[in-house]
Image (cartoon, rainbow, N blue to C red; front, side, top):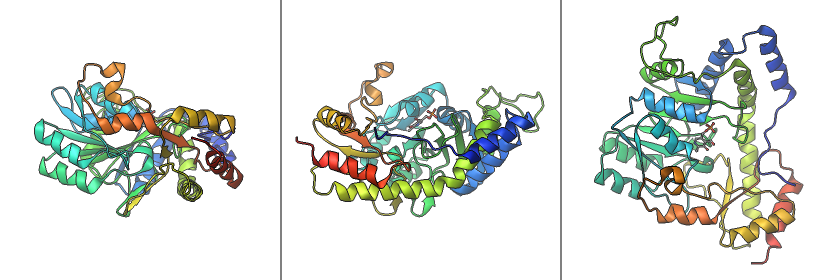
Amino acid sequence: MISIAAPELREEEQRRVQEVLDSGMIADGPEVRTFEDEFASFCGTEHGVATSNGTTALHTALEALDIGEGDTVLTSPFSFVASANAIRLAGATPVFADIRSDTFNLDPDSVEKTVREQDVDAILAVHLYGLPADMDALQGIADEYEVPIIEDAAQAHGAEYNGERIGSIGEIACFSFYPTKNMTTGEGGMVTTDRKDLAEKAASFANHGRAQDGGYEHVRLGHNYRMTSIAAVIGQAQLDRLPEYVETRRANAALLNRGLEETDIVTPIEPERRKHAYHQYTIRTENRDKLIAHLDDHGVGTGVYYPTPIHQQAAYDHIDFHAPVSEQSSDEVLSLPVHPQLSTTDIESIIRAIAEYER
Ligand SMILES: Cc1ncc(COP(=O)(O)O)c(C=O)c1O
């Protein structure tokens, strides 16, 4: 079976983990600081603050911006539920705008309308599937209404917008290192920002509100959202290979695009000035269940991200909202394997299986 995701862990990770185990500094040791610096430098930001996962990174970023009770944060309903959950965990209220059908990211027109009609204190822009959101348009709205943009870059390590790495575009950004992502630390997350004040608050919040000089002085309420050194060294090894991973994902996506040209499958787009990191290669198809079954029969694993938009989840049934494009996308999207472990034969098999599919 060709799997939809395949994290690659090499001897390098094993060696580095063994070193950490031997050192005995297995929790929040110096390796975490090194990984923070290396990841921030990769993104082109001044600061990185490591966290226990992507959800805690989002919660931490919101807290760093002092977003909490009484505040409203606009985000995409077509995302993993964590994007909106983090807003609620911070005590704020999520509001949604619809997405564009071609990019699966927030539709600036819908965002503008929402921000005009109701008070919004921040915009949490998701770079879904590794494709950067329309940051120029969103930044224009954010500037006009004087609200910060938080990037949910959980799926977009190595993506670029206008030649700049994702993670450095908004006021603050958040990554996830879950095993299916473009790079992993097992569980893990990172907040990136150029702003020293936000980085300091984030680091403090993720460590029980500890004062900057450490010790047992606590200046704000916080959590234990710390990353372990074991995770950090896995992250360092993975980060070294991230550019190569992203290029392989892009090459695989290009082969899929070419191979599916003759079919009526709607393949992903890469708008100008955006570099897609292809965390997912997501097609659009009617009668999705039939295609999933057909591909399964031909040994091709697939994934549906996400079958239910956030505003239609039971945990959000208090929200009365309708987003036609997100809802239709939830019925039609299907992700095909694009990860760097695929062989050319695997990709040919995927293309052949789709070509043989009879609608
Ligand atoms: C868009 C998005 N946001 C947030 C998260 C949360 O990250 P984590 O699973 O590491 O908590 C994910 C991870 O799946 C995600 O895909």
